[in-house]
Image 1 (cartoon, one colour):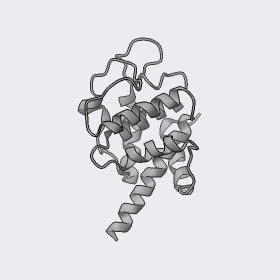
Image 2 (cartoon, rainbow, N blue to C red):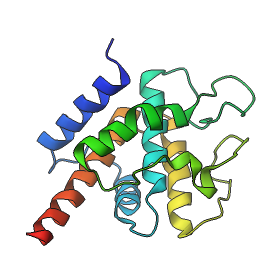
Image 3 (tube, rainbow, N blue to C red):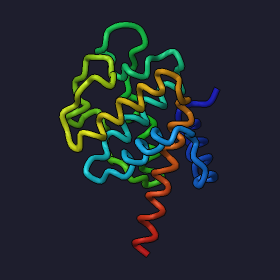
Length: 170
């Protein structure tokens, strides 16, 4: 079985090779992912969501909505572990347009002890990114879209944005 790092590398390569083809068929979900990736005001939700998706892929029995070990009940996990151990390495290696540091230390994502549902309200701006983050996680929890496809769609948009930024610089 591949390690989380190996999976991320494979997903990155796949997104790079299929950059013009969406991995998610749901247009509203695509738009939410693109909004998160293009939001220059706050990049923390990208890494947060990537870590949750990777945990769900690595350990299918976890509840993607419980990325904090403080959340009681079955299925909780350390999203920060996945963020710092695997997502951070990928972000730095490929210079992806994300936060360079963990999302779990930002004010909105610090010290949560409840299951993440769309009804939860995060304090932060812009508000839409937090609402979309919760909706994306809830969509994956409901198995409306596979975690692998959603993670690759995030990587695809990050690669598109990276290429756009590089083109502007040239």
